[in-house]
Image 1 (cartoon, protein in one colour):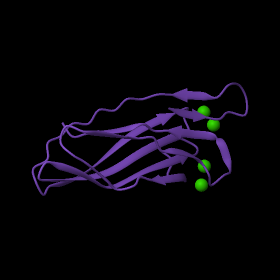
Image 2 (cartoon, helix red, strand yellow; image 1 turned 30 degrees about the vertical axis):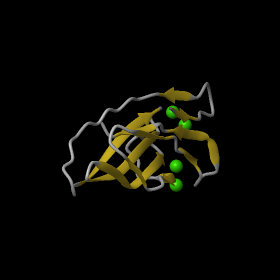
Image 3 (tube, helix red, strand yellow; image 1 turned 60 degrees about the vertical axis):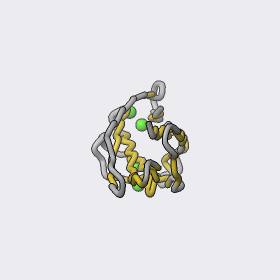
Length: 121
Ligand SMILES: [Ca+2]
Ligand SMILES: [Ca+2]
Ligand SMILES: [Ca+2]
Ligand SMILES: [Ca+2]
């Protein structure tokens, strides 16, 4: 869920579901990005890297970047949140709910709550 604060009128709210499926063989590492845009001004990117070893999936890197500016393609990075490294045994899943907001410009009314579920199935 993304909230784009507006000076006039009501804030703009957006929801986007992204489903990414892939198969890893043992020892393999992959990085992916999931992107959502909102209100003509905000773009949220979830970057993550996973590695598989003997059936266990390791989240080795994870980060949410919050961009806010003149357009949804702005490179004005206004907030970021890192995810803790973790591991998921076969048949298990983990859910992370990182919250980011426009910290750079001290505008907490621009924010995003990302729900990220990693499924090792
Ligand atoms: Ca706005
Ligand atoms: Ca807007
Ligand atoms: Ca900005
Ligand atoms: Ca900025």
